[in-house]
Image (cartoon, rainbow, N blue to C red; front, side, top):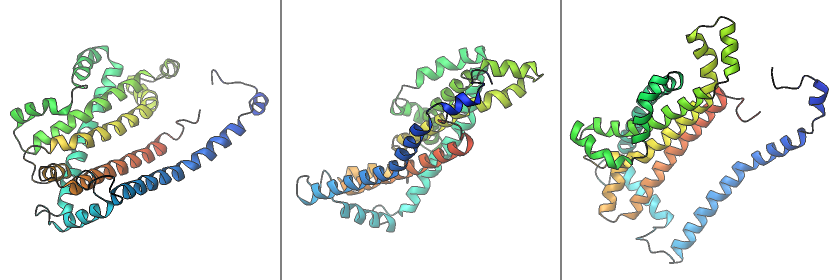
Amino acid sequence: MSGLPLDATAVSETPRSRPRRGIRRSGALVPIVSTATVLACLGLWAAATHSGWIKPLFLPPPEAILSALGQAWNGDLDGAPLGIHVRDSLMRVLGAFGVATLLGIPAGLAMGTSRIARGILDPLIEFYRPLPPLAYLPLMIIWFGIGELSKVLLIVLACFAPVALATRSGVLSASADQINAARALGANRLQVLRYVVLPAALPEILIGLRIGMGVGWTTLVAAEMVAAQAGLGQLVLNASNFLRTDVVVMGILLIGLFATLFEVGLRQLERVLVPWKGKA
């Protein structure tokens, strides 16, 4: 392969083994440090609330959050069990994320392989991408009503931009030498896209999916602001109206927990599909 040393002895003599051992050792410490950080935050939280430094109205103690979790689980807060709220939020986020993925990846491929498609889609995406979802939420309501369609479309728009732009970036990063080599071997346009461009763009696509999933969860509360019968965002908003800070914190923690679980799942998928990433 071009750009690689041809002398195997020279490669073996390069002092790379020690730094890589150091990297592996430091990588093994990451879960320990992360766990210690979470435990330290919980300890500070408990100390601050039990000592009276922070009033329960502003930050309830951890046991109050557990009590609110029990009330929500039994449906004592608003009549709907916690499972209903979780189910509705998951259906909205995952459904919107699936639609955004099915639309965003082809759009990114088109922008990366066609100048005409890039000229059409790029200014539209770049225009609305910085806009907060709350800015165009009224338009969603006016155009599509207060039902589920407007909620899902709001999350779709939020997830679509990072997926499409990351896919475009990945396609444009494909090696011109590899593309030319594939064409020289007789590959047609579809084969070049499938066997050269897509594998090269896959790491960027997966990063876009991770970002899109995170954006979807951040948009959930805005999507459930209007006439939602159930959902974690709706639960948080209703609790804030009655100054139930314990329920608000519980809902925030649950949203963060589910978002973290999906982020970890996408990272594992990334390790399976692109195991070579970061090992160059």
